[in-house]
Image (tube, helix red, strand yellow):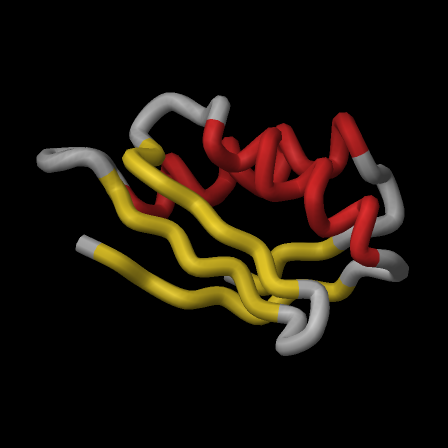
Length: 72
């Protein structure tokens, strides 16, 4: 399953950090972040609990860039 989420981030470098953090999250098959559109696309692993995974994605992104936001 693949879903798209609105994000709030200040710069392209921060968006790159968010993408790396999201891809390291358990349950995420692939994630990409676009600073230009302020969107994050996430493809989930089969059987993953989307809501739980996205809470972890948000937490991991906050660890690398504390003023970013992922709107779940």
